Length: 199
Image (cartoon, rainbow, N blue to C red; front, side, top):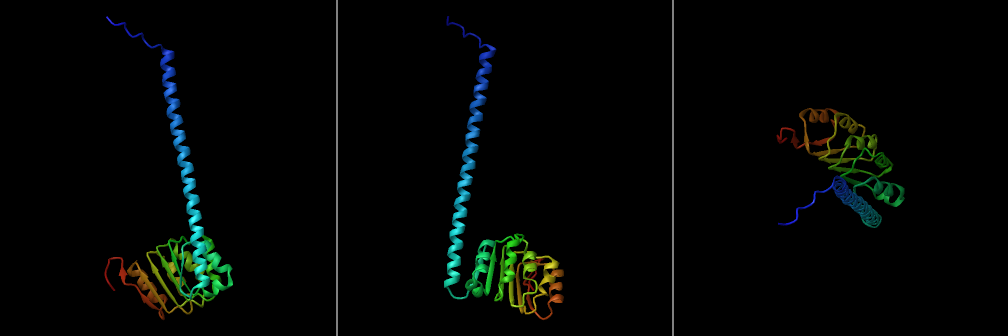
């Protein structure tokens, strides 16, 4: 008959449980450290790529013909504003995936030759309209998938030379009526109402 297995004493069992818990905690801690440093390296790489992209865009602005300039962050806008040649060439800006709650976008008001403004898939577009308030150089705007409120619509009336505005997004019937009332001398294009009715 085989020898019976001796019972495990309580202190040995507790040491085994404690050792298991310690190993599990060490593994979880190591995984957390790896995730933290991985995210940090990823963020640094993204920052490096963004800075490289900004430098490339800025160089193209300074060297190329006057054309639409794609603005995706406030840092690129600040670079343009700070350089007299680039600021002079900035006649047409297209903001993409921007968050205008970043007050550094207020620098746009310093671009005295700015005539055309596009806004695509951006947040807080009303803030941009506040930054543009009263700019006599602006003649055309288009706004796509960047909702504005009634106060933003009213700010459009402060642009004395605005000739045309196009909304490539759904607008309520009330907003369309407010646009037509607020901008009687501006060509307003609103092809989409909230009910998906074509105008």
